[in-house]
Length: 393
Length: 151
Image 1 (cartoon, chains in turn red, cyan):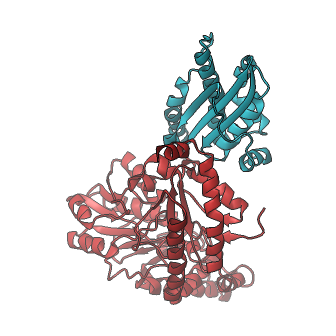
Image 2 (cartoon, chains in turn green, orange; image 1 turned 90 degrees about the horizontal axis):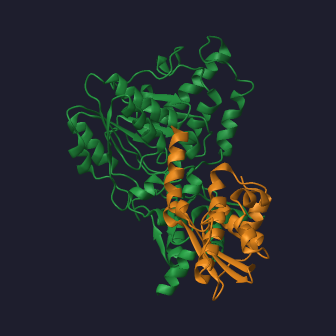
Image 3 (cartoon, chains in turn green, purple; image 1 turned 180 degrees about the horizontal axis):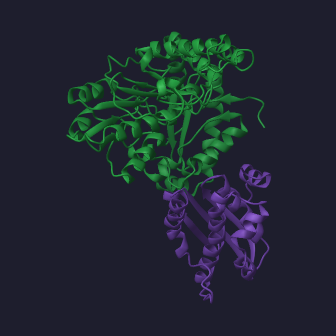
């Protein structure tokens, strides 16, 4: 095993930042009160929740009454899609989304199709961009929701959210964006961008796992998600996970404050990695838009090799990364995102996603650049596909 | 998720490469599904004296190729034809269920290479062991199975 550990999978999850953990800790032990009670430690929990809610609202340019805590980003996506669909059935049964959404959105939409809803899955271009004009053309009188992710978790492409929001507003259709990968990385303003609903998740920006939030614009018709007590104003019953809520609030506050500096740093790491890998390794392809992409995202396909093999060998060298290969997706098809941007199955199997975070350094990039090319060379030497290419040249 | 033996055969694969003027060459799998195995055999008097492979695929695909070549070296053609995918998987101390198809591919690679050898020698095979119709079907079969599992 390698002595060095370089974590390059921040899009999967991040560690909890020290200040965040410190803010959370008292709410596990001495400040354990149930926020629905009236005595002092209960009121203290209530106050902590409301302060966290303000921080989330501030980060999105929303009103504090428009923020609802959930158990995860996936829960927020489930709530918003089912909740808007069920609450607006009398208006229509049509939903517009994209073919590169996270499974939390795609599988929820597929479930709704089984319930009689109709879903349009918009295609994307070779860079993974949704065309706002396609959105406009897909809108029907019975369209009740448009759900387009802010930034893609695999290829990092950032969508023209403001343009799509303007179209949705003009047509009077609710607009949801799954912003799980974007919050803390990209400036967001729900009013300027005409976003009606937005999902986010704490553990993508150095907050804890198991906590997310849904922004619901005032006046949007949506069913309640959990039926029970009066928590989250009755919309999402459950005794609040106070430490996680406090952690989410602290994490989003820091992420918003540090965003410019954080982005500058990540973009430098990202761009050097992309440029140098293209200089050092032949037969590779960058997946996702070169500029309109998340600051820390690199996604490259290495022709003639398979992603899981690549990940295992990187792991032996202490580098943690991710792939869109079938072997790592838990299914037998490679990533639906990579197929949607036009990659062949073969090329999609050989993809590698590297996502940088705040603890990464240029030395980490140097280490990656030393480590990766020989691994690719070794796997290609073993590949019967590469043999044919070499013979062909 | 992988046994130590799988990792060993993945990190230090035995018999990687090609054999010039091989007596039998077999290629199975499909790049679309994410794995292709190509096996080369040197056969002397009905005994497999050397075996090499090249594989495009995941860790289990490489490890099963490596193990399969180890297992057939020194065996007669008849003995090699009897090696099952389960035997390959067991020799590696097991494979995760989703990776069992890699061991099937290894078994098919052996059979395909031997079939090629027999064809070259004009020997007919009673059990038609080398015919690899299953390979081209495999991807879809597994997909269907997966769809059922996830439904």
